[in-house]
Image 1 (cartoon, rainbow, N blue to C red):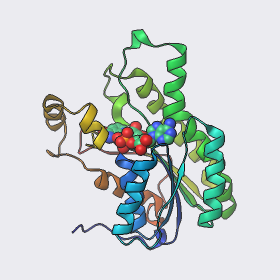
Image 2: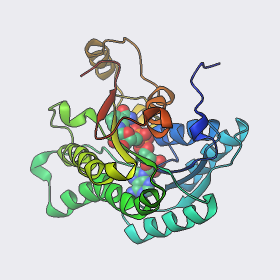
Image 3: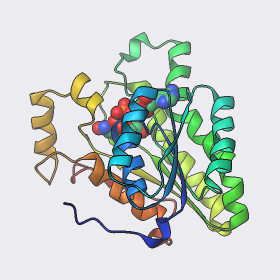
Image 4: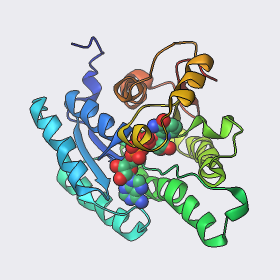
Length: 256
Ligand SMILES: NC(=O)c1ccc[n+]([C@@H]2O[C@H](COP(=O)([O-])OP(=O)(O)OC[C@H]3O[C@@H](n4cnc5c(N)ncnc54)[C@H](O)[C@@H]3O)[C@@H](O)[C@H]2O)c1
C-alpha cells in the first residue's frame, strides 16, 4: 500500500505518453491512470502494451488507457496517433516524451546511418510530438510537457555515445520550448532517471558489479523504482508544478 499523493488536477486530464508499453513508460501509464487521468500511449510493442492496459484495469482505473501501435521512427504515424488520441480523449493537456533506446556501441564503429538512427530513436520524435500536441495546449492556455532525459551523458562513460548525445539534446528541447511556450501557460521540463531496474535493464545490462557501483555513488542505498520515478512526472504534470518550467530534475537517489 503506497502513500503517494493524489492530484485533483490530473483527474480526467488527457495525457499522451510515448513508449508506454514497458519499463518506466508503463509505470507512467499506470500511475496517471491511477490518478483518474485519461491516458493515450504509443509504442511498437503491442503485447507489452496489452499487459500495461490489463494492469490498469486490475487497478480499477477510472479510464482504461488507449493504445496506438506506432514506431516512433515514423513521424507521420506519430502525428496520426496524436490526432486520433485527441479525438478519443477530448483534449490532451499533458505530454510525456519517454520512448528511447540505450543500446551499447563503440564510438569507432559509428556510421552516418547509425548516428541518424540514434538521434531519430532518442530525440526526433520528442520534438514532433510537441509540435503535434502543443498548439491545442497553447490555445487552451494550459499544458505540461515532460521530457524524460537521462543522466547518461553526465556519466562521461563511453558505452553509448549516440544515445548520450541525443539525451543531452533533450535538455535543449526543454529549455528552448519552455521559453517559447511559457507566456502562453504551457510548461516544459525534463526529468532524468538514474539507473532504474526496468525489465530491459535487468535483462540486458544489470550486473552485480554495476549495481554495486551505483549503490556506492547513490546517497540512497537501494534501487530507485519506476513508480517512484513516475511521482516526479505526476507532480510536474499537475497544477502543483505550475511554477516549474525550463528545469531538469534528477530522480536518481542522489547519484549526481
Ligand atoms: N531505466 C533506466 O535506468 C533509465 C536511465 C536513464 C534514462 N532512462 C530513460 O527513461 C526512459 C524510459 O526508459 P526505460 O528504461 O523504461 O526503457 P524501456 O526500454 O524499458 O522501455 C522503452 C519503451 O519504449 C518503446 N520504444 C522504444 N523505441 C521505440 C520506437 N522507435 N517506437 C515505439 N516505441 C518505442 C519500447 O518498446 C518500450 O516499451 C527513456 O527515455 C530512457 O532514456 C532510463
